[in-house]
Image (cartoon, rainbow, N blue to C red; front, side, top):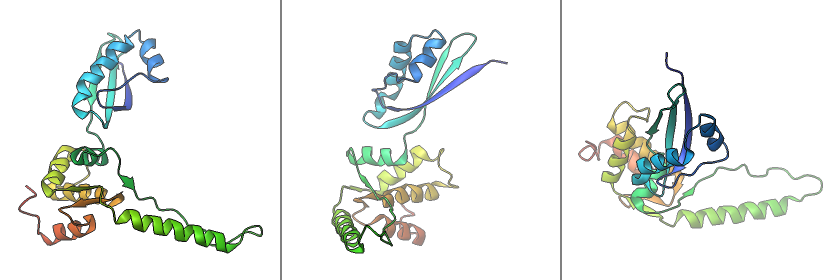
Length: 192
C-alpha cells in the first residue's frame, strides 16, 4: 500500500504562491516548494483570473508529486464568461425587529429603508448578460461536479447560481424567468 498525503487548495489560476500552511507541509517532505508551485501555475494558467481548486498529492515514500486541477466554482466560470471580475452576491440579512432600552426603533427603520433602497437600485443594474450557449458551456464543464441527473438539470443549476449573482441576466431576462422557461421546455433546442 502506497502512503500518500493530499493537500487541497483554492488558488488563483496561473498565479498561485505558497502560503503559510502549504510551504511548511511541502518542505517537511523535502520538496522544492518553488517547483511545486511552478507546476501548479502551468496547469492552472488557462484559468487566469479565477480561483481554481487543486489537489497536491504527495507519495510519502518516493516524494513524487501529482497535481490535480479541479474545475472552478460556477460563479467564477460565469464571471469569466462575462469578462467581469466581481458580481454582487445577494446576502439575506435579518432586519432588526425590536429596540433595546437605549435604542429607538426609528433609526433602525431608517437604516432598513436605506438598505432596501440601495438593494433596489443595485437590482436595476445589469452587470452582465449570458447567452444560453454560455450557460450550457458552463454546465458541461461542471456537470461531473454537479449533483444533476442530466445536462438540463446542470443548466438549471448554473442559471440558479445567476439568481444569487445580482445584476446577471440571461438572454436579457432575469434568471428566474429563464428557469421557468427551461421548465416549460422553451430552451430544449439549445440544451444539447
